Image (cartoon, rainbow, N blue to C red; front, side, top):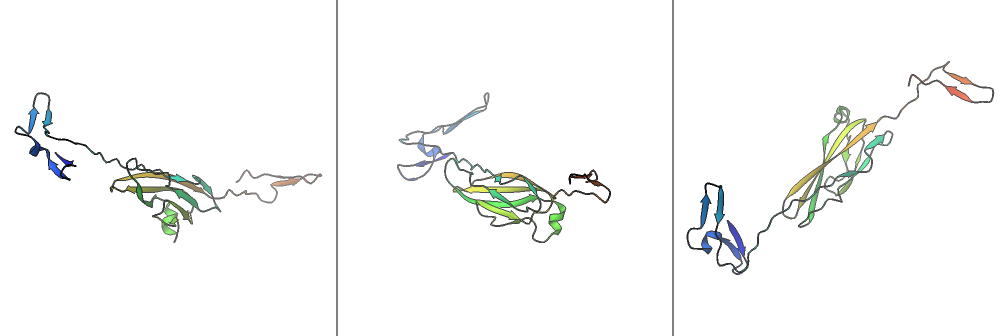
Length: 173
């Protein structure tokens, strides 16, 4: 066990602060005790990881709309600052893999960015954030892109009444 001594401004081994025994092990209770002596100031520091928060402007997109905004700006670090964001596509439809430029992330290192040229299917986007102590966290967000519904009808599947109302039978849609 080491600790930071504000007295000498250096890391100190706890063994160097006491006469032996430096540590004891109680085998019956499986308790390990380290003895620290002669300290005027002592502090333990625990590094907390950041909390990644991923949001999307719309989880359901209907073509011809083909873009969404990914937003990681609500990500926080309880004991420091979030210093880096990284967006990636974790999962995408097979059509996106064969369509050049599909699911293009505008600026993958920005807290807020746009994904464009989405094709029909289901996507998972991952945000990884890093804090000022090189700790990481990630969050995922899902987007479904649907094709535009189309009404299908053929000749003989519509009626025009005497008052000009058109009734269409689109049960084949």
